Image (cartoon, rainbow, N blue to C red; front, side, top):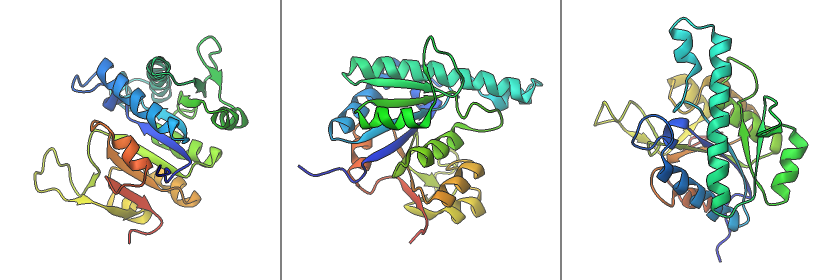
Length: 241
């Protein structure tokens, strides 16, 4: 049997992706689909950790734009990610996977506190680790959380699961002639202002040489394909060539 290309990965799932076609909240079918795909790659021996956004429930930057204190709004966003993490945990365990939710904001009744060595130990024991509550600090996105956690646990790659099939030179929903990139360098992303992840997260990946693969989560089997090394989506790394 063919071996996976990556041994330890961080799978970043946007909150919007979990809402499916609803645009808000959690769609049961999407949770089941994600859980099935993640359980499948774990069965191949891949050590899987997840970072989930909260944009399907609350966005701190939206609250700030409405006049709310930015830090307060961001903390609410972190709590939204915990809700998504618990929903994913439930779906994964129903799919037969052993999981742990590690939260950057301490809430012992529902999640373990985030400790780097504990996270690595869980992965080594074959558990899926779900990182919740962002970095625990306002003003930082869950993209930055994914980059930070990937560096801390020495993940080989960040799999950026979205509702689009890669990175484009303009919004493909607005511009039907938008061109998709197959490969980009970190500097390409920063200089062009492409919407892969925010500049803090991109810089952190560049500094630690962590590649990022942006792909379509809504297409069944894509998580397996990207882990096996198939060329799907957009690859962001040290060199675009």
